[in-house]
Amino acid sequence: MSDLLTRRPAAAVPFVLALGANLGDPLATLRAAADALEQAPGLEAVRVSPLARTAPVLAPGQAAQPDYLNAVVLGRTTLAPRALLRLAQDLERAHHRTRAERWGARTLDVDVITVDDLVVADPELTLPHPRAHLRAFVLAPWAAADPGAVLPGPDGGAVAELAERAADRGTIRWLAPGWRTGPVPDAAPAPAEGAR
Ligand SMILES: Nc1ncnc2c1ncn2[C@@H]1O[C@H](COP(=O)(O)OP(=O)(O)OP(=O)(O)O)[C@@H](O)[C@H]1O
Ligand SMILES: Nc1nc2c(c(=O)[nH]1)N=C(CO)CN2
Image 1 (tube, rainbow, N blue to C red):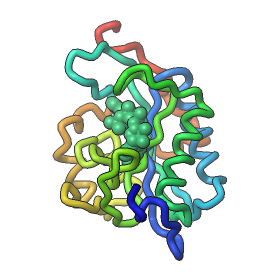
Image 2 (image 1 turned 60 degrees about the horizontal axis):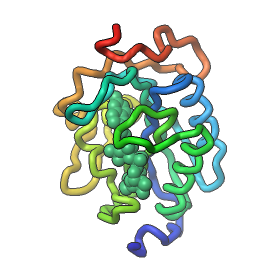
Image 3 (image 1 turned 180 degrees about the vertical axis):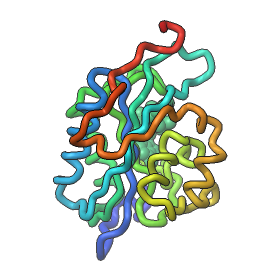
C-alpha cells in the first residue's frame, strides 16, 4: 500500500465521504451515520449536505432496486486515509451492510470520495473515488453543500459542472436541506421501478 495512504497528516486536511442507502429505513440510517461521523475521533468541522433522493444507477442487466437516499459529509481529518476508510467500513458494518452483489441494494454505503488533493490508485483505496466524477448522486449533493468544490485528479474539475454533465443527473428526484431533524416527505424507500 502506498505510503500516502498510511501516513497521518501533520495538520487536519479536507475530506469528503459519500453516503447511500436503499434498504431498511434509509432516512434513519443516514441520520445515524451523519451523527456518528460528527462525533468520530479524528474528524473535525463536519458538515452534511442536503439529502438527495435518487433513482438507482444499476449495472447492465441488474434487477430493479428501490430508490436511494444519498448525502455527502465534508470536513477535515487528522486520520490517515486508510484509517478513514476503516471508519467508513466500520460504520457500514454497524448498519449490517452485506456485499452479496456488486452494486447490490444496501442498508448503508460509505465511500471515501477525496482526502485532501491526494491522487492514488490502490485497489484497497483509490483517491479520488474512481467513479465519483461520473455520479450525480455524489456530485449534486456535494455541490449543494459546497458550490465552489473542485474534484482533484485527471478526471476532476468543478463539482457543480461535473454534476451537470453526469449521465444520471436526471435521476436526482429532489434535494432536501434540513433533513437531519425536520420532516422529509417522501423519504420512505420506494418500490423498485417496474414494481410500481
Ligand atoms: N475511494 C474508495 N472508497 C471506498 N472503497 C474503496 C475506495 N477505493 C477502493 N475501495 C475498495 O472498494 C471495495 C468495494 O467497495 P464497495 O463494496 O463499497 O463498492 P460498491 O459501493 O459496491 O461500488 P462502488 O465502488 O462503485 O461505489 C472496498 O473493499 C474498498 O477497499
Ligand atoms: N442512486 C444511486 N445509485 C447507486 C448508488 C447510490 O448510492 N445511489 N451506489 C451504487 C454503488 O455504490 C450503485 N448505484
